[in-house]
Length: 282
Ligand SMILES: CCCCC/C=C\C/C=C\CC/C=C/CC(=O)SCCNC(=O)CCNC(=O)[C@H](O)C(C)(C)COP(=O)(O)OP(=O)(O)OC[C@H]1O[C@@H](n2cnc3c(N)ncnc32)[C@H](O)[C@@H]1OP(=O)(O)O
Image (tube, rainbow, N blue to C red; front, side, top):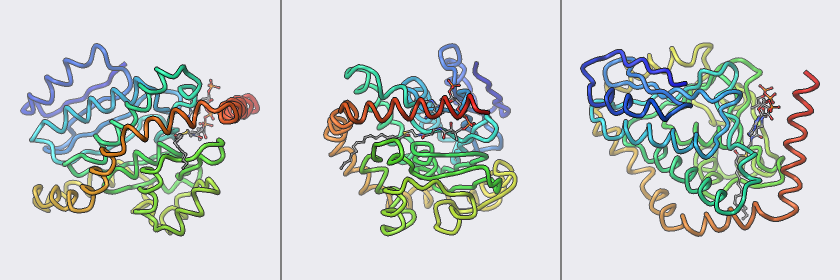
């Protein structure tokens, strides 16, 4: 089910391209909520976990927006209460090798499309963002998180018996500094909003992140000339993206070799069982 609320008819280009996709897309929608400002809304119940098709769809929507020169700010949000994104779909890790490769390639592409977006991007987190959910947020330029203490954010991969890929670990280091990242990576720390704010993992807490993000976009960010925002992003991100492209194939091989190890597969199955058991206890 795709929900599209393109409220500015003048943006024909964006509208038409999104409408064309509506028949095949199921988990994200795009809507222009203010001139130049687009919401990208994730809706893949129960927890917006990033499956192969979800990664591909999100990427495609971002690519459509990238081409639309009338949009200069993207607000990434979820409409599942209490959840931003649960990170990668763990069930994908148990698939055959060819599918694993396709999956990781789609996840890499999503990183490129979000981290490399020329538009200014704001993550509006009304709920938890573990692991690759945190990657989505780290790839944005600005992060507004709910002040609800039930929400958590961080890189918890080590608790699944795996590790974040190097480029995600690097995003964490770039954002919170090496030492805090180092500790949080091996501990798999998930931070409550106040803690996340204290270490600089998020930029602001707000009881209504969507409202705050739109206010920031219009009252603050759009006042800075678009080309200056884009050029500033290039200054800070170009080197990382260039390196990523150089290492992309090696990263893919590394992922497949790592994830297909028997010990890792056993650990992941155990983690999925823990999640199911937790749900049954509720
Ligand atoms: C030099 C050496 C380097 C080595 C590294 C090399 C390469 C890299 C290798 C690997 C990298 C792999 C990278 C991984 C990044 C990831 O994103 S891993 C995913 C991590 N995510 C999580 O741990 C989140 C787990 N989920 C939760 O904590 C909670 O579900 C929640 C998000 C906080 C929500 O809680 P809530 O109570 O609302 O919901 P439930 O827990 O009841 O869940 C509902 C339903 O959803 C299923 N589910 C939850 N999360 C996932 C998920 N990530 N994938 C798939 N399914 C998920 C859960 O099982 C329930 O399912 P149901 O019982 O069938 O309804």
